[in-house]
Length: 633
Image: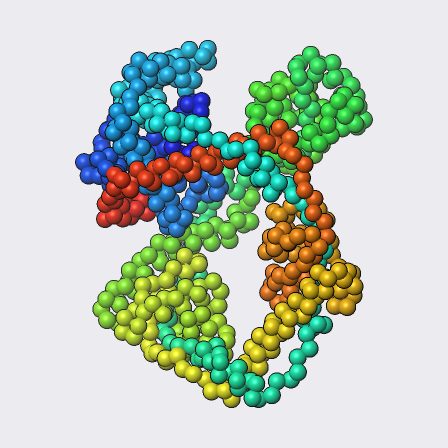
C-alpha cells in the first residue's frame, strides 16, 4: 500500500514512472477531470470524491499489462478477474480517493509556482543537456491526452497527498530492542537430530475380527456411503472432430507457403567468441597477438579476459543486439579473427568458430504443418458456428442425442458417475483434464434443466444432460467389508504410530541417544546441521522445524512426515544464539521494519478514512465495464 500511494521520500518516483510510460504513473495517481472524454457517471464514491469509469479502465489495463509482462504472456480477462486484479485496482483507487477526501477536509495545498518549479526540474521533461524542454513537455502531454493545466492539477494532488502521508509516517521507526529481537529470531541456528519411523517396522497390528470391523463401520458409515450417481448424456464438440471434417486443398497449402516463406526460413547461425576492450587503443594493441594465436581463448585469457565472458553462443544475426558487431561477425570466414570493431556499446574483436548455414524449408517439408495450421484456424471458426447450432437445437427442445446426430458430433451416455467424475468401478467417466469440469457441470444441473456448456482443454465445448439421479445410499457392511478393513488398518496404524513416536520422544528427553533409538527403530539417524527456522532440511517438514525452534535444548518431539504416512522423531542438540547485529545488519533490519510499520500505519489510516467517509460502488456498472474488458482480450 505504501509503495502504491507514496512516491517515496525523494518525491521523484513519479518522474521515473513517466517513462514507463506516463499512463502507468497515472494509474497510481488517480485520474480526474483533466482527462478528456470523461463519463458523467461515477463508478465508485468515497465521501464526495468520485472514481469514474475511464479512470478504472486505464488503471485496470495498466495492471493487466504489468502482470502480462511479468508472466511473459498476455493474461486473459478471465485470468485477471480470477487473480482479483479488478478488486485490487478498485481498492487502490478508493484508497487514493480517501486520501484526497482527507486532504480536502484539512485544507492542504501547494502553490502553482512550487508545482511549476518541480516540473521544470523533472528529468522526465529534460533534454540530454539536463535542461527543461517545453517541446518535450508538450509532446508528452499530447501523447497522454492531457492539458498542461490538467497535468499540473494532477501533480498538485499527488504532492498534497504526499504531504499528508509524509506527516503521518514521519518519525515511525522500530525501537532498538525490537530490532535486536528480530535479529535473534532470524539468525538463531539449531542442530536437530531426527529419525523417521517406518510403520512396517515399528507397528504390529493383530488381525481384526469381524466385531472390530463392524464397530469401525458403525462409527464411520459416512465413509462407506454410495455417493449420489447421475446418468448423463454427453455431447462433445472437440477440435479434432471438427478438424477432421475440414478439407484443405494442395493449392491452398501452396499459396500459404508462397505468401509466408519467411516463416519457414531457417536463418544462418554462427558460434561467436568475442573479447571486449575498454577503448580502441587497447584493442589495436591486442589485435596482432590474437590474429596469430593458435588458441584464441588462451590468448584472450593471457590478455586479462575471463573465459566465461568470451563465448556468445550460437546466434543468428537478428539475435545480436549491436548491428555493427553483427555485420562484422557474419562477414567473417570460419576460424577467422575480425579486425577491431567499434560497436554501439563496446569495442570488440571477434572470432567465428562454427557456421551453420541457413535453409529455406521446401513446400514438401512443411506441407503437413501448413495443413494442420489451416485446419486449426478454420476449426476455431467452425466450432463457434456449430456451437450456435447446438444451442439452437437445445432451444427448440431437441435432446442432445438428436443434435449430435444431426451435426455429426460425438454423443455418448454415461450410465453413472459421481461428483468426482468416476463411475461405480472407480474409473474416470471422461479421461483427461476435461473429466472434472464435466462432472461439475453434471452436478450443477438437474433432470430437465441442463447446465451451461463446458469449455474443454482443446478449445472445444461439451454439453451435458442429466438423464437420471440415483440418490446417495448406505452400503451394507458385507458389501464394503474389504474397504472397512483397509480403512481400519490405516486408522489403527496412525494411532499406534503416534503412540510409538511418543515413546521414542520420552526416551530421547530422558537422555537416551538418538543413535540408539535409530538402531532400535531400524532406521538411520539424520542431522540437519546448523539451520535457521526458515530452512527446509531434507527429512524434516516445515512444521517439524517450527516445532523444533519452540523447544529448549535437549528437548524432543515428533511431527508427521510430508506424505502423512509416518512420523519423524527429532531432538534439539545445539542452540546457537547469534551475536549482536552488526551496524549493517541493524540498519537493514531497521529499514525493513520501518517500511512494514509505515505500510501498516498507512493501511490502517486509509481504512479509517474510508469507513468514516463511506465507500459506495456501482456494481452494475463495474460488471458492465468488466464485460467490456473481456471483450477486448
